[in-house]
Length: 184
Image (cartoon, rainbow, N blue to C red; front, side):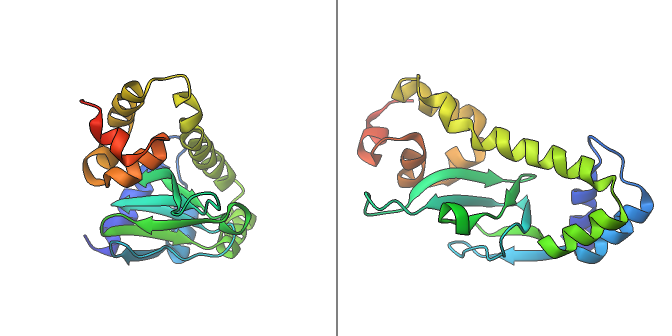
């Protein structure tokens, strides 16, 4: 896929809820940084930058002092957004498969908003989506382990198929051995 195709994918996603005026789109195209991220590499960004996932799978991990490994707290896939607050929540974002992303730097977001205040409507929608996705784990608390796996399979089909048992079980709050013993 070339740059124009990636831009078009982003444009179509952003236009789903609010139209993008031509002047705003031209401005956005100047600040979009399209990046290829290889499997097992980490996304790098500054505080409050945005990454939009064009294709692939990114895993959000948080350092957990009580565990020997990092806890998986989210799977971010195609047409989803990462708002970088790693310095605040001690997280990292790792590509689980080769992925393509768009990076929009916070400084550029501010400039676009100054010139095109209507862009705030688009950002509010994106942030709302982020918050809905990030509260997902709280909805699993009352479910049995089997129900959590089934719900995860339904809501995160790409992660269910592609990600390791260790990552999925960490996200669902169980050991890998226990996860593997549950028949689905």
